[in-house]
Length: 424
Image (cartoon, rainbow, N blue to C red; front, side, top):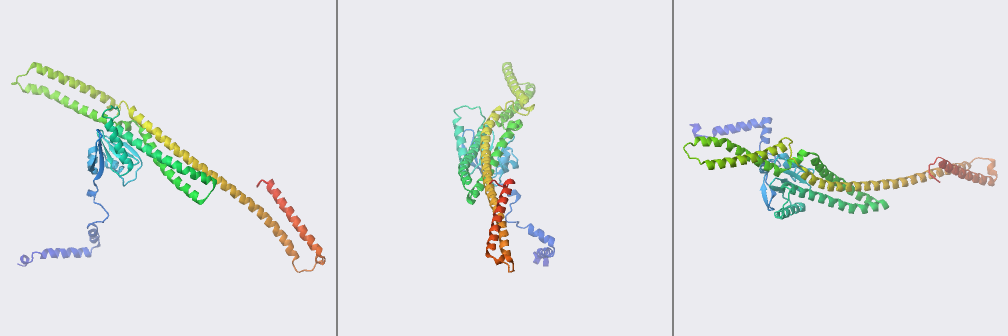
């Protein structure tokens, strides 16, 4: 009866018991505080994938802004999550060009994009380089509708990214040269704290810019030295090869199932002319596809790469020459800074040597003056001697002491000259 009257009595007892055990059990209390609402700054693992703004550029030159999350991009382009981290603006990664099965991941300066055989996913940003890249790529693709070009779509997008990266870095190097040369010339003329601080700031900027240019140069050189990586970037060719393989499998399957169909349909009348022409067409398609498949397999399956990668190699080589020229400018500028620092060190060393010479001469003169002062101090003592009977004798002693000090000073100078301490 009491249980029917108080249906929540048992629940209240359980809650009070759990609160009592939690209060007097520190382990449970720690677990309860941790498994509550959680820390305010942390994201749950399932909600870490947020949508990002991408600019989708197609082969015909059209573009649109789309909102995609990481999972969609990974499925569409067959990319691992570590490749997408290279494109994340929250992380700072050096310039990278990666060739994957169905996409090329490009991270060059401000240009961060994913290039496939049919489209480009460009990381949307308000940066001027991103806007210029998008507009220039669309203009080039629209112009190439009327002018045939042998360059595949993925190489057109990659070429423009390399072009923008090389031009951006070269412009920054030119601006640095124009700013740093007057400062170095002024520092060579007059050494001051302000000029030294400006040169130190420019040198830090030069070091950071050199690292960026060196990374782009190393990345291009690495691709040129690895034929397998270059072969991975032929996305259009791999797509065509995949479609040919699918067509081959389809034709082979039809060829295997056609005799069964003809044998099973005994009651249906069959025209000998139609069947003969269909068989010829099927045989001709089978021979064409098998020949294409045999050629593709001999070029790709055996060697693991396309027969001709000279197209991509020449493209990379052209921009490698440009970025290497930019790197040489930076190295020349660094050598100019080092030469200026050496000149400043020589000037400071010369001033220090002059100070040391002056200090040496002053020390010798102080020593002789001390000797002269000792002589005068001796005669200043209160004692009786025949020398004090005649005042002229004191004058003779002072004069002789002064002459001896001068002769001794000359002897010091001759000794310094003999030891080549400093030229006189």
